[in-house]
Length: 153
Image 1 (spheres, rainbow, N blue to C red):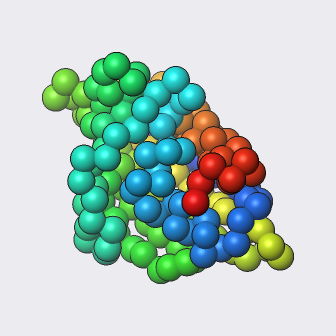
Image 2 (image 1 turned 90 degrees about the vertical axis):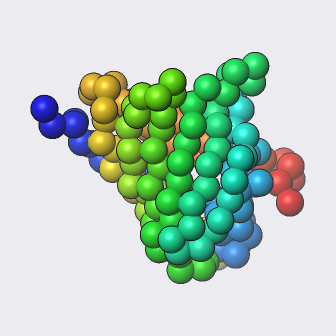
């Protein structure tokens, strides 16, 4: 049986200079603030190693039980313009999906155009595309709100 594979692209003009946006996207502590898959979820850092070949681990889910483990492996880092990494989502020993994510940041006056390309291989069925896309959309919405309000340093 072949895992369903799908892709999607999210493009935003973010009201932050390229260097600042790069930091917010790649810094594990910053991602804890904006990167949860919904406003009702939490993202908790367990380990971080931001370098090519580096790995990170977060847990995410409801604040009272962040039951999902997110293992990130960084493949390419070209600060402040491009990054490529995979994320594997696991809960209770079951792998739900693996995604390949690419960030491209391009200066746009005082803002930055961010393009996020995501390819998802689902281990549990067709619904993972919607889950991954909803999670990324929610996270980027939160990132933009927090930048706009000055909540992210």
